[in-house]
Image (cartoon, rainbow, N blue to C red; front, side, top):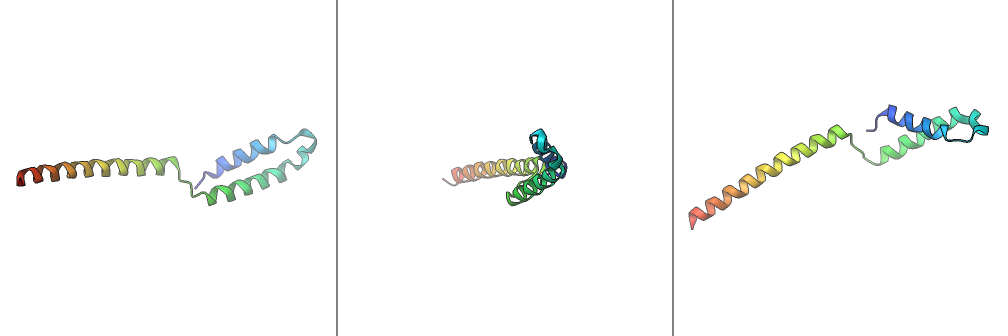
Length: 81
């Protein structure tokens, strides 16, 4: 899930980019931008960097174990012949 503070910051930046003559709508625009961003990001099934790094670590350990098992299997097959 996206960090709510990050979504708020993005919404503020978008509303700040609005021309000065309609700045009085800034709060409403900021709320709308926040809702749109929250909705869009929630549909994307995003993960945090920490979650990604944890899964990458698990994948790396699994790959190492698989390679070690493959090597053991090759060695056993050689011993049988």
